[in-house]
Image (cartoon, rainbow, N blue to C red; front, top):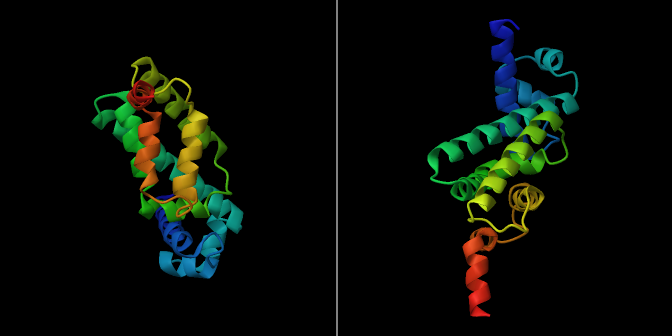
Length: 178
């Protein structure tokens, strides 16, 4: 792809991300083109219809999550701390609007890469004795979905409580109290 075509594509995706976060998946294509500083024809040459644009946006979003997961792994002292930091980062309100808007789109290969990487981290945390063994990556993906894709369904103050519940030490403390 030519450099100018790449720049236009990137500008369109950035504008689409902002517009979708503000207005949802039905944000007008004309608004996206205007914000990107390109003509509507340029937008449609790059993305023939809304679904193609949203799929590209979803792919980009999942890759950003993978980068975020890698940063958490690099910055945190252990697998459980990395999982926790990743979840907290992912459900931040600034990212929640775009996650909610893209909930129905697909990015199967990127999403599968994220699930596999997160599953590996969950297994490491469990092997280290830091995370409950009866919790899997599917549970973690549901937690992310509730807080990132459906903001406001559960009050934000419940996220730390739910994360504490995934930690093995919390389970052991509760058992001792009982």
